[in-house]
Image (cartoon, rainbow, N blue to C red; front, side, top):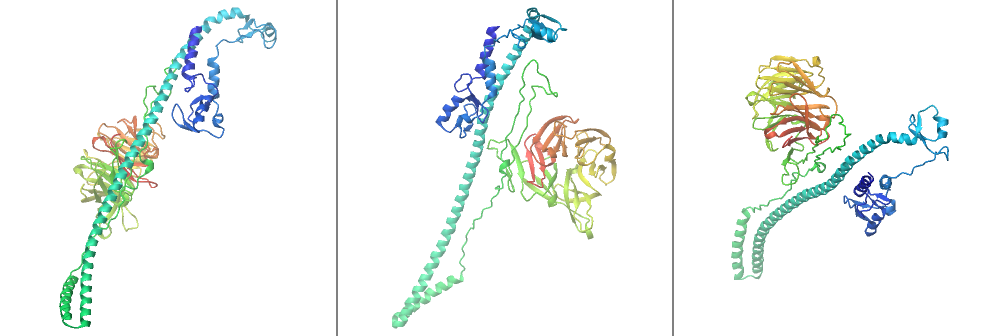
Length: 616
């Protein structure tokens, strides 16, 4: 038993209570700013080499204050542990009573669980069950031995877990160095590419400059030659005229010839073609703070201790992950950094060209139709973020039968691949009306179906050929003729502010309610089926949900606006995972071909964008 105890103390001392510099037990341990601990003397030796030095464990630079190593905080916790663990483990037994010295502690009070003397018995324990200390020790020996055995079992288990922590610490330090190297490599590569592009542009500027100068020099030389010839002829003729004689006649004839040539050239315009260079800094409006964030893959490590308990239903093997995807914004261009060590996502953004993007719908060939409300148009882009075209949302029936523009905020693809658009009419009348209009995907106006009081979103059941519109707190379902065939009265089911709507593959109607922080599910005939979600930021909770869609697996994807994330539920509304986190003000959401996730971001206080993620 004694050998086992000594071996365990040595193991703890060597593995956890020894300085990693001198490899001896800590002596006057001091803590660096990185929270790693070393002997004061060891740190002083390092400090003599340079004022600042790297921590031997994590290599973080540590700068000493004016008091040097002595000014570093003492690690009293480690000192206490060293004192506790490194002592011999043999306690000095006090045989005399502290209250009645020199009386000896020969008795044991079973009621108080205390060793006492005869005076203590008379004063405080006269009515208690008292026996001799020797007899009580024999009785308690088996129980104490069992506790010792269990305690040592716990100690062995926790020692193993401490070794796991130490290994994890080493892994974290290595990971830090690796990620730092990757970040540096990524931005060094980006800087290299920028410098390469800079030099190429400057070279083109210089080449164009040389061509311009060469052309000007050629024209200048020709003109100077003509001027010199005419000037010389004039001077010679004038001098000959003053002197008189036959030379005057000869010079005059030469002057006439020279002048005639000069005059003919004067009638021909001198053309000078130059290429004036200008620079349009496309893509210069880069959001530096969002250029490559960290992706954190976090794993919960739990002790295997026999006394381990599950908490809140969490299993120790559960792997918890949070993903922070990289966003890079450009100016009227699509940017992709596949050749740099970032997560593979595509971000498409146009500064000053999107004005409150909201609804999004995806065609079978994965063309994205974005409701660009502020610009009164539907924008079309491909799954890689490249511009395809746009539809100007003009409809008939304005004042005096003139066409009128509508500001679209919701869009859905219907049967025949037609585009159903909800928007507000920009009318000269005193009160603007909302309308549902139909366009072809190429932009041809087909017609206007019906007007609404307060529409918010639209969805199309292509199988049943029903169109569903959220109008106020209600959901109206109508056919192609504009006749309402079903009406879901929102107040009857507790809807307060229904915002977005979609149709599942099975025909169920899904409605997100930003005020109730939940999703309501109805049958295709408007019968209430279920609801899911509640206010909060935890698993399965929502806060101000907006856009909603389903994927080919029947999963439900929700834009959780106030939590700045996209959440995935199964077809029954059970939480599956967080698809995207850290995306502010997500409004619309859709799934494109090959599992790409499309999110519209509409933010009055920041960039408005369409984000396209390779996976979710």
